[in-house]
Image (cartoon, rainbow, N blue to C red; front, side, top):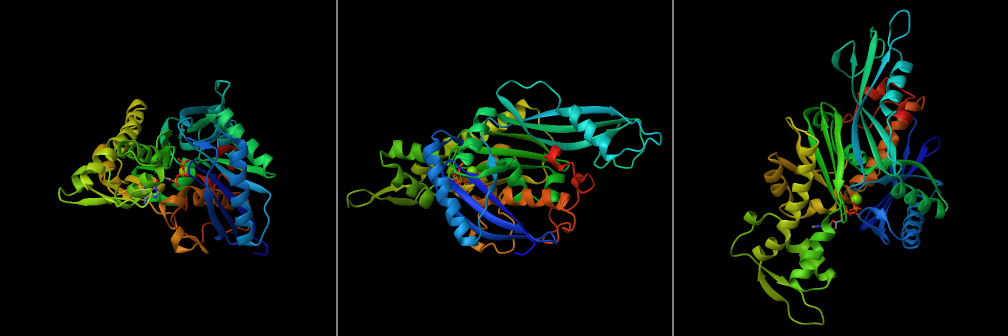
Length: 414
Ligand SMILES: Nc1ncnc2c1ncn2[C@@H]1O[C@H](COP(=O)(O)OP(=O)(O)OP(=O)(O)O)[C@@H](O)[C@H]1O
Ligand SMILES: [Mg+2]
């Protein structure tokens, strides 16, 4: 690890707190040095509701990650998600002052500052300013205007904002645990970093992370994010429904869901039956598998439909050649791709995080998408600003893009 830059990411989820310690070599390769998880306490719908409880989970997972990696870390990259995350489209127009009319990085910087300069409600803060494209003298769809000639530069961006109080609580919790927040990254953006290829972003893709208490969504079109949002419903609500309808404790409902659950009723045969375990040593009860699906499908359909309504409201339409990609623990529920495909009327697949150096295969699982994406997001940022780190030598998947040329602007842009 000599000469490498060490990074630590923490995903404080509603069900699990996950940590990754990784390093980026001088050549720009990302290595995973440790990855671990602990059940999450004190987090509801992606937001911390009990700092003391959350502190315990955080300290435990960080200690384990440090032990595994054999290193100590002071700064953390943390994720934030949930229905309070909102993407607001904005534009920033500036005149090109240079005599030769050549667009410089400073002009891009100015246009982004203008795009960000709108009045925000008191309880909102800007988390990212994501570039969609640029317009030079009325010409649309320019991805990289540096060195072009023009009189008027317009940047089109998605300004991603979140609730200040939810963000502050998370920062406070990290500080109370004795660490510093190096960066706060929206989970949806981290997810995309981990599972979407450049081609999928270009073709248009809907990426959905079904967690325990929240379901996050980000939509890419023409290579850039056009929508970021989410709903405060997730796999835990499915488990609660099963527990309520079957009148069983949550642990049994969770086991039944993971072992036999299917959220797409037509995929389950009429003659299929399952055994529901009982507590206190009582014999298991047999029931038709379709009956269980009838409990699960409505909740999952509600989640997907709410997301689809959000897209309609924001008028996010067009062709999504990359279809729907599902990640998060909830994506492991059988029938999830079939149901998503029916509701969004698009092909759907499960997304797996990119295989990074040093990452055991067992972690190439949709559950670890966000925490690995946080490390990858930071590595991408470092590649842009650190002299001497190669451009993506470990993967061809995410190369290119606007960021390559506007080095040094990352702090503002992301
Ligand atoms: N094999 C499986 N089948 C069905 N559901 C599963 C399976 N494995 C995990 N889940 C569900 O995934 C959910 C947890 O997902 P995940 O670990 O991504 O959540 P989280 O990141 O802790 O929470 P959040 O993102 O909501 O803050 C739980 O509701 C769990 O029941
Ligand atoms: Mg999550």
